[in-house]
Length: 494
Ligand code: BES
Ligand code: MN
Ligand code: ZN
Image (tube, rainbow, N blue to C red):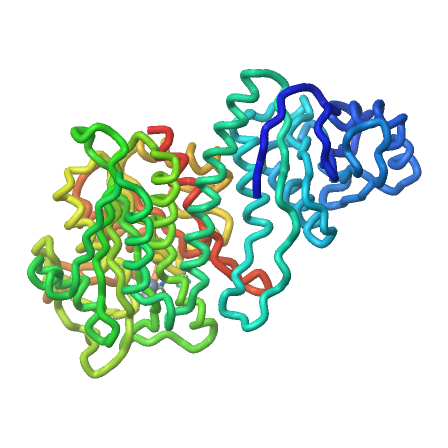
């Protein structure tokens, strides 16, 4: 899909099959909608008057043959109250428009949804959200179906910019939006791919694919022998029950001068989480194929950085393995020595994400990173706390917290801060090892985060618990690609 930017005032001279126009609940027609109405001889106002269209959110109506303009049709999209319109509502309106256009066979459209003055939307972000939303709306994962549905016809969505400044911002928004969309799609593809395809080796292959695309990347994949040499006893204990070999993927992106210290991104890459010997109940266990979505989001962000040739240094560290039961699997009560030297009593083999991340966080130290951020589908408790709306953010660094929260807000991929203070570690005391991998029943997301902080062992660390936000359930079941937009926005604004 292409997103050309056109400079000028609506209705403009741009030939299109469909002008996508906002319609509000209150007040007279304004902005682009009014300009089209005037050029079209008042037909839009009449159409609304007759009750064929309204500003009700989610409602759409096509108006055919908009004579007097270069648009063959108009798609009127309900946007609710004018003074409540914002970036989030814009995204809903865009998704509604994409849904209405998909079955029509229309190939070219121009979106004017962001161009009602009332919204006061930032040109850059409005363009970015337009690209991201259209691409997400047309995303499909059907590579494993024997019959593919016909591809939607939509090929071009133009964006209008009022003047040269707006045009420049809009173009930047489109470019960043395209890169983020590509990253989100990679993360969604990897997440949706089931565990019999998406193995640790497959994740390594995907990382190699990113590295081969651009000179700025360097990749190293460490196998189990290498992990043993590095004394990664925590990571190795998780993969012990699995036939499928574990992989530690280290993907380095250098977009800034060599001296600049990198940001380290550690992504949980459990390609399937059975729980191990502490085996999970059967209901919805299929969703544990998504337990590598942290890894997938890190790869998605790296892909976007590569496409944008972003001026930052980032190192991705991805521990990837399966968590399986079996005669060689780690047992509850087993004690393992992590790469950091700290010993861990494994009281529950289903608390495996923190174990593989523990060694990844220790490994990250060798890059002397400016920030270390881990991304993980870590706890069911985080889903209980925040649902599927906010990603859980845990950090000991106020400045980093502000940066990540802002990035989430701006990119409509929001995070909410939760605590990880030392008190949350008190219930993880062990009589036999330095501490256990399991805390008390309460505040499970915070005790897991606290566990990680013992391995990050520094300021400038943050943990994103995406257990709720990485995928959707029910008839929209599938990976979301979150938090790729948050991560890329954060990295672009460093
Ligand atoms: N991958 C799961 C967390 C998870 C569960 C994410 C459900 C999304 C939906 C993680 O490895 C896990 O099993 N966590 C346990 C930890 C517990 C044993 C302390 C959990 O949350 O139940
Ligand atoms: Mn688990
Ligand atoms: Zn898990």
